[in-house]
Amino acid sequence: MSQKPEVCNIYKSLKKDEMYLYVRKAEGFSRVPPVLLSMFGTPKLFGTLLLTPEKKLARADVALVLSDIAEKGFYLQMPPPREDYMLDLYRPDESKYQ
Image (tube, rainbow, N blue to C red; front, side):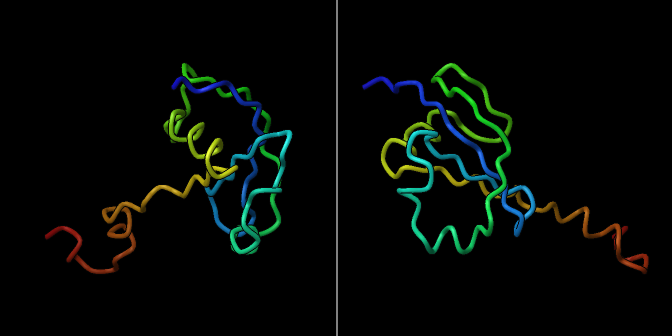
């Protein structure tokens, strides 16, 4: 089954840096669980986008985004994992070089 294009609103979380919520523009938050919205915080509109199977997204697989929106009514993009080596920059001693 081929995926159909979706016009989506993308919301940025004000509680968690680099967390985004994709929803169908026509449905809004009607299918997003209240507990998720509570955890997400007040959504701030980041943009509106026509998602197609051919579209490339920076940090998400468009096929998964379209699939989740069709099945669940939303797609939650989590922040990328923190790199351990970046934490080493803040160590005050020489152990970061071992």
